[in-house]
Image (cartoon, rainbow, N blue to C red; front, side, top):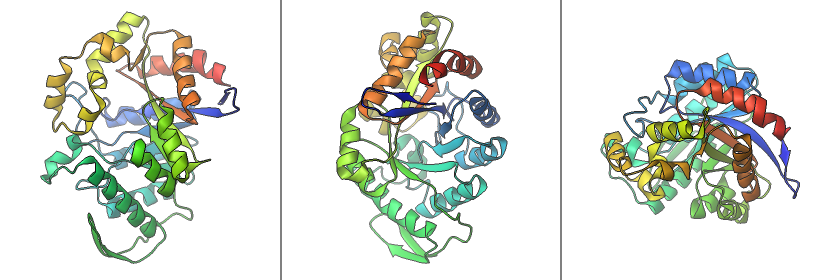
Length: 326
């Protein structure tokens, strides 16, 4: 599936698997359905906690990925995203991602990010500042790549300690490693990663990525939508299931518990959510949102359908959106 803009850039369409909203068995079924409906790729979120109690789920991403790998045959699947830190040591990430690539060769990619306090607070460590989290991520990338190469790794850095770690189950070719972020993180990704993951149609992140060395590498994006029979129904559903999207971006990495997000999200109204989520059944609005990411320089857009009705969304995109991107 590809759409070409006036500059000749193409876009591939992916499907977002929202671990916070769905039972793990449903996530597997949704991945199979996305493959059957013409999506070429999927990205799955990695959370210890949902954003709000209403969302209700947060399964262990690596278990779900193993099931998806066996249930699908062509769908590319990656993490969106894993954060190296107290919850996920680089050794664990390297081993889990290497095994995922062995089980679905050529179909897995590892997405990494600097993390959210929501998923790290439970481990009792101090929550680092943004610059520290970026440094921690950079250190983790180097360790993961050394382990993927089969090295016997001993290392003591600013953030992680490793003594004689070595992976014995490794793919012939390591999976692509992508990094989520903008600004300095995007620039670091250009230097160290195989691709970028973004959440807004902002060309500055792509520009920072390319200036850092990422020219020609994939740029993936997340687009929130809520397909429904009417725009009003979509807006109501989006507010119920994904209200935190209406909060200022810096807040998303700093709050500690789902109840904290729920308390702050109670101040968010439908209009604030609808500014961030494409709501309703108008295919032109969905296509326009995809094209905004294309215009910002992204090459693959992963569409997140907010709420329970995933099959209705998949039917709509198969019938009304994907044909326009062919």
